[in-house]
Length: 200
Image (cartoon, rainbow, N blue to C red; front, side, top):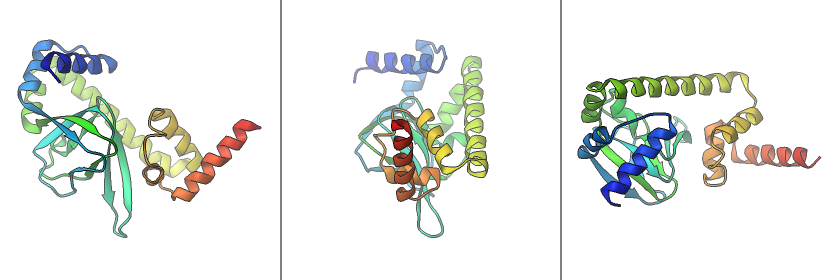
């Protein structure tokens, strides 16, 4: 992938979020970045690994997950094109707070988290967009917490489909189920019930 193509992709991704980022800023970001292609099933980082780097997904899908005290694999978040991954370093952690796995072949723009934050803080426009991203992340966190308290499993699944419409068939059902806090067989029942209701 040549630089011109990468710059265009980054500008297109930024515009998708309603952000207007100059080519000069993109060039500075690229100067502290590298690009990696991860195979399906490859682990990018594990919980507890040092976290000097973070990344932006350019193509593919990555999930963050953790293993609970009973040994269960719990999906926490799905990062698609334009979203941060391996983000612990961007939030001031020295170690990764979760593990990250490529769910399909995925290309990531990997960068030094401290240098990227310095770049963000040196530019008022980037600082504004970073605050917007943090606020969006906080809203997501609040929704996730309240959803488990007040929504049924079916409601959580419908919200998942609304939030990630393009991923329902690309993500393993096991990962979707653990994201929703239910068993895979429960997810199958929910999907069957919704399908039957649509056919009525």
